[in-house]
Amino acid sequence: MPSPSKNPVYVLGVGLTKFVKPRGKIEYTELGFEAGIKALLDAHINYDDVDQGVACYVYGDSTCGQRVFYQFGMTSIPIYNVNNNCSTGSTGLNLARTMVQGGMAECVLVVGFEKMERGSLGTHWEDRESPTLTSGAMMAETRGFTNAPGASQMFGNAGREYMEKYGACAEDFAEIARINHLHSAANPYSQFHDVYTLAEILAAPMVHAPLTKTQCCPTSDGGAAAVIVSQAFLDARPHLKSQAILIAGQSMATDAPSLFDRSSINLMGFEMTQRAAKTALAEAGIDAKEVRVCELHDCFSANEMLTIDALGLSEPGKAHEMVRKGDITYGGQCVVNPSGGLISKGHPLGATGIAQCAELVWQLRGWANNRLVRGTKAALQHNLGLGGAVVVTVYKRADGKANEEVENEDVAKIAGLGYNPAVEARGFTKEQVNQVRSRNNRSEWALGETQKRVEARF
Image (cartoon, rainbow, N blue to C red; front, top):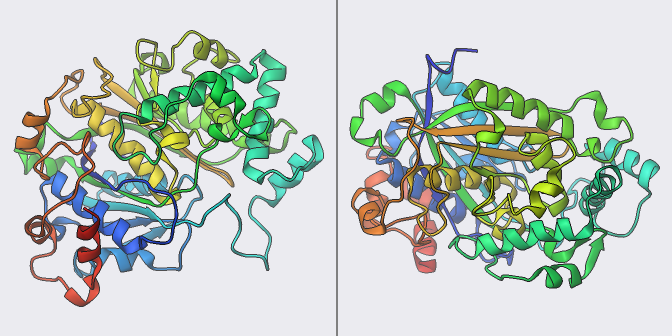
């Protein structure tokens, strides 16, 4: 692998849709289009500048990516469709970074989108074995099986083991959820903006102890996109260097044999998260304790507890102590999930990892001024998919400095959207769409009614 110091890779632009409850009212084509247009505008580029495309989704037929990307233009570039369970979005980012770092592309557009069904996750393939069959069988043998949704049982059991081994209690997991819901109130893209007391979290309907309903992420419809570029691409546009965010370290890992060592914690990919975190942090040249802001995969409060430990934010077995000290929110050691996390922001599978990236980009730029983690030099991202895969990423400002708050009117002067997208979930104009769609290789037939439907929501 080429040295990242010799082949640096940057996030130049990001874009998000609001995350909403699945109601079947918004097509994936609209979600991908909105996010992609916003990312192109944020990067101040035209789709003709894009060398390769990566589409990220879990639920959908093959080549949904082409259906989305053709709306930007039909430029004959390679388009890859990625599905890696809940880590799909960050897997797409990892693929894009690998392409750029390896000299295979100068500019890659990554678009994640998901149109989901109501209720808990399930399989769409009843005529073949599930890829998580072996994990489910291990859970049934070690902890039994109930009528609760399978994922909540798996992560809930891991939470139970953390309680048994290290002394965490139900209130610790509830506190994690309380904080995430509180954080989401400042994120205009969040599915939920409700704030709860600790007592209300604990009193919510029990799903699988210690997890109550408000400690479980919802299913969501949503889209997110990012523009990933090389040093040469950025050097050709020096006026954009102030907004470029360096991918300083990144590692994608899969499971080790410990997955099946009968530990409920290890069954949730604890070792692969540890491995990916150590690799990414070492590449970035920082220690986990230096991280001031982190977006991690809190599909359940129990997984946030495990991940705080696995990433090295806490001492081994001490994540609950970090929670009790207030060290995972503003004023503490590290603000975890300033976006509200999956628990409150929502979890459209293909978009989640890219949405985490967008939040950290806005934090490092200083644009997220209503929820800014001040003095941040490095930001950490963790995105997990059972089955399994995990991607851990470290981001830094291109100038190596700490972030500083930027006022909305100042952001509006430099942002491609004409307003601050970190604090306002607004749309775009017809003129802006025309500005970033391919100049010479666009198809109105491919676009169809998508743009009109997206604009109608604004």
